[in-house]
Length: 301
Image (cartoon, rainbow, N blue to C red):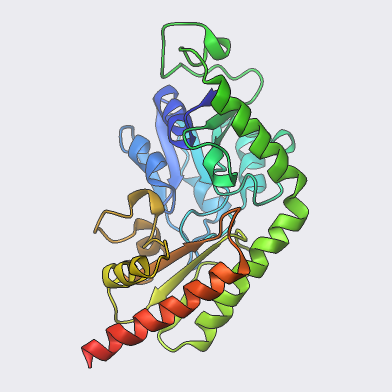
């Protein structure tokens, strides 16, 4: 089912799943917001943001209507054990939704082999048009539509489809999948200097799993400095990054993801590499970040 992005895809799943929801504490706000409208159980994670499949399944009840699990975390990049969770949910006949917004186009993702009931995807995450996305629905699953009125998308989403947006989504996905083997290495080569810089820089550390992570994301913990002046300084240097989740970067609340991991939820910097990012961009960003941090720390002393 084509839609406007992962948020609408997740909303469709949330709308159709009227019973109890189970979700990891590090899920995207789109999942958490829908779960909050239903009876729900939030399952904790370890220090790198990974949930234990046994804990997730143990939280299920007789009235559980959906189990949510993201493929890769949107802030720290940690990859979740989605294949194991989907398999165990299928064994127990528990519907399962996988948020693959940070995985598709960046990691190998065989959705047919995965077998999840729902997989949500956002096109702009792999170079597609903004406002494009899809909800991949397992054959035989019939969710109650969020948008009603017509029989478009096999009566799963009413309204005229945006053909131009869908074509752009498909073209970008074809290109991302074709380049996956080389592009994943390209993204790792872009994030590696950031990780190496963080290891060598006092007061900076890398959050999330150090190796089993999405290749295009790095989240840094910054000791002793609030993220807002860092973001302002980088913006003045022409560098666009985020503190925590990019979808709520204007909010001043601490990151629920980092809080669930047991680390400082107030001071982080999320750096993502896009399809157009170059090594020179990374070098420029690291130079600007070093200068901004030095200036801010000199002001404090």
